[in-house]
Length: 429
Length: 157
Image (cartoon, rainbow over all chains, first blue to last red; front, side):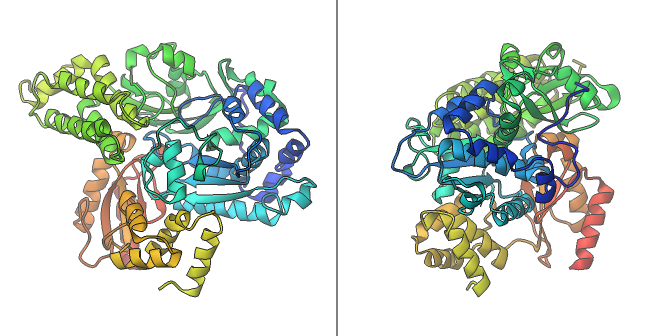
């Protein structure tokens, strides 16, 4: 761990400035990429084993290969920086400290996929960061790294435009088909798939959507090779990754380290452990929608998709939320469910109605009106949302409820009894 | 009415997309920056500027949290109460604000200077508890910090 040198967020002062970025090899990777064929680039990305950092960990090279090679329609790339999953706060670091890396990655992906234009979608609340990215983009345009003039600069036939699209506060827009509808200017309800974006995306044209962090890995993969990238971290899910650690830890923050780190090492060594040396009750490893793990279950669990799958969770956005032994789980679950109820777009009945019902039941549990059958009722509502909706927000809302009940039943029953005044003090768990 | 400069910005946004419809979010941001919120009149105006149906503009405005359909404070305090902030003391943030300016969630001071809003995760979990004041993020909040921020804004008016 100690010898790992960060590449996405290296310790280089003022790297967000284009001249500093150029001094450190910036925009040299797109030049090299333009000397390769698009197929060669996609092959390098395939060899690297890069998997999407936005939540689903889908192999990026494979995703790219779905784009049709010959089509008479324009092709588009969307860079997803909607970053709204509670516990995720990593893309903002790239916008602020290394925006040109993201822009260069977008150009390389753009060339490999033959796109006309790319849209960097940034959540509306990040207005200050939208301005930082727009500034970086304006500088890149001015130096002819982006846009029509790149043909002249690089002596190629390829050129593409990059635009920033600012959202306006809707979690659902992080879902790729909702994101495309948002860009199109219609109500951003997720689309039914198939057809998939590579066939029928923005304005019905072939489109690829990649997360900001995923795209930012691409220049380094081109420069140092697919094998280099594949050798970092977990073999089946390699590369540097931005861990966001928050909640009950002494040093919360974003840390760039290899994938496959031990969760305990991240919490205790990297993030400085739990305040007051308290025990951990619960950890959510990848943003609030991922199944929670019990504190005593963390030993040996590594932050990569295989290890977390074996432990009964998933890596999501690698946003780790730590909760100590005194945390009231009913209250947390109520808050998480409130989030998904507010953010449900309302298109599918199980999600729109189910999140509301779960919230009502959780409210009464929290306020001492709970009934003994409520946990089973909640579990059943969650199971009826899971898998029955157009997009994954259904699962995102159902999983925290479903898995917290399955894994923390004793604690929840205890909290229910205390809230109902049946017991005056909580028994330590 | 948009100024000449704002209309230029509209044209610039419009040039990013193959359709007029796609420019609607950007134009609504300009409108809200100018008028503070999106009124029915603004919806009609934006529809006219982009030559798109009013119902499309209305559909977009009503979907997103950030387009206000009513006047809000000059300074909008968005307090994140989601998981990480809750664990680190968002209750304290709301209480400190309420004690200082007498406003809870969904309320505005009589002079229209501040309005308080409950925010969903603002993507600053490492700086919990946090709030945003207009576009500025304030992280690792303590009662002292919050009071200082509010005092400064009050003085500025």
